[in-house]
Image (cartoon, rainbow, N blue to C red; front, side, top):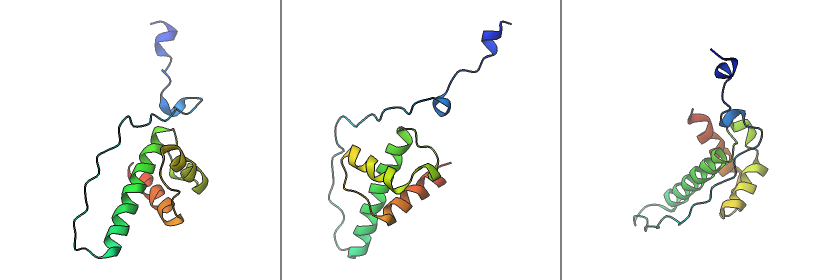
Length: 102
């Protein structure tokens, strides 16, 4: 067997440069939220959605570990994908989502 066949192929995790973020081509159609819930439910629901979008964008851009996702990194990713800068609580939630996805 030739030595070249034994050489491992580079994968995403061993790449020298992070992969550029592939922006969505069309935004997801928004639906109205169910009426009659307490305000805190809506705040939490929207925070979770934002954290999930940010976690996916970070993972797509090559930030694979929660300790790599500092608040500045998360906020710059938010600016890149076009969402308002997240609060410290949302940044914490993004790291938690990245941690439990493994």
